[in-house]
Length: 178
Length: 191
Image: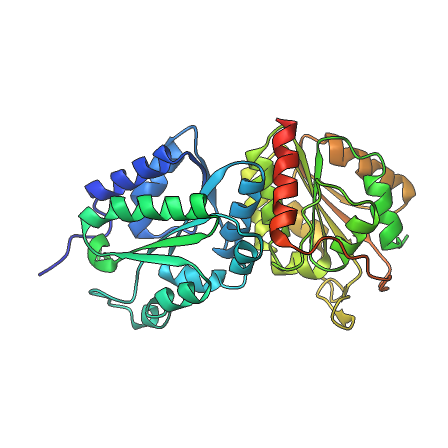
C-alpha cells in the first residue's frame, strides 16, 4: 500500500494551524520540511503570525525564549534531523523554565528511502525525553488535534518543553522521483 | 583604539533609555553588563552559547515598543553566525547586535578565535544585509553607538574591539527562572 505523498494537503494540517491560531501563537519559526509545507504557507499568509525562517533549528529555541520574555507565544517547526541541532540550546528552556512548543515531522521510519535519515530519526524520542521534553507521537489523523492541544497546555501552562512528533506514516511518503 | 571592556559597557549603558533591554552573551559580557549596574531589563545569560542574538530577535519582534541590544563576545557570535542572516532577513527596527571582540575565548584560557584568524564580523553582518554596521574606532564612535542603541530604526551591528584581559568576575543572579521573570515583568511594564 502506498501512503499519499507528503506534499498533498491533508485536513489535519489545517486543523493544526487552527490550533496554533486558537492558542494565540504569534511567532512561528522553522527550518522547512515537506511535511510542514502547508502549515508554513498558512502561517505566512496570516497577518497576525510572524513567520521566521531559520538557518538552524537551535535558533528557534533561543527565539522562543526571547518571544516569551516579550509576552508572545511561539512554535518551532522542524524535521526530526533538526532535533539533534537543538540539544544544548534546550538547556536554556530547562534552566529558565521557558515554554517551548515543538512540532516535529519524522523521517527515518515509515517507507523511508534514505538510510541517512534513520540515525537521528530513531533517537528523536529518547533524546527529547532526556532533555525533559514531553513527547507525544502521532500516527493517525484523529490524534493530531488532541496531541497538539495537550502540548500547548503543557508548554504554556506548565512552563516547559513539549513536542509533537508527526510520524512519517501520517505525513505520507516523500516524493522522490518527480 | 582598543577599549577596556568594563569601561566600554559602562559607556554604552550610561544614559540607557527606559525602554532599552540588554541581552548579554554568556561569560564576560554578562559580567560586564552586571558590573555596569544590575537592572531588571538585563537578561543575563549563563549558558546557551550561540543563542544571544536570537533571544534578542524574539524579544524585539514581540515588543516593537522596546529597544533590544544584544552585547556578546566574538566566540559567542561566531557560534551563532547564522542568526545574523536570520535577523537581517526579518529586519526588526529595534534590534542592535554589538560584539565585544578580543579575538579570544576569554572564559576558557584565552584561546584564539576566528576573528583573530581574519574573520571580519562587521563585513559578515553587512553581507547579511544589516541596515547599518559600525567598526567602533574611538571614544566618539563608542558614544555614537551608545546613542544609536536607543534610537536607530533598523538592524544595527557594531564591533567594539576590546583588550584581551580578564577583569575580576562580577556575578549577577544565577537562577534562570528569576532572571526570566524579572525581564518579562519589565517588558510587560513598558506596554
